[in-house]
Length: 189
Image 1 (cartoon, rainbow, N blue to C red):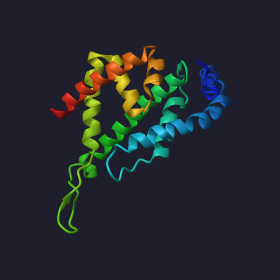
Image 2 (cartoon, rainbow, N blue to C red):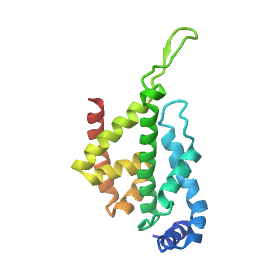
Image 3 (cartoon, one colour):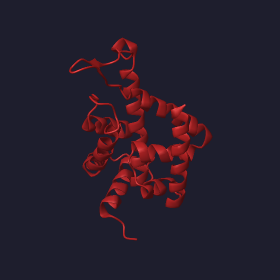
């Protein structure tokens, strides 16, 4: 199988960043921005209407979490995106928690009175319920939790998840189906 030149470039630059090359971080940004932005757009599409976090801001926060002065042990491009999906989850959960705080009006219900009464529920509770269920899943099966994070929060393909975890695509598919069913059961309670 022929390797994508950009994939090779990203992996090489990640190795340079890991070894302390400060110029490499600046080279990494343009190579990963589009993919991180695609992940952010896909994730924010699932969020509540009027979400205050924009895709570019989410990408910036993720990139800072991943490169912000700490040494990270990235194995390759797929592993970097797997870690990005975890960071995206943490940021979105923290944002949902902040949005739901009572001092910020988190217990209010939005009601509009144009042409009748329409209730617009916020989706913050969904992301928090998923986060709690994922934590429970991680206690039971860490790999399945990682697969959900990478697929749902990161938007990674089955192949990318398989590469990151060092398992087959078929195993990813099987565990993704099981994890989705398990999470649905947990959240729907």
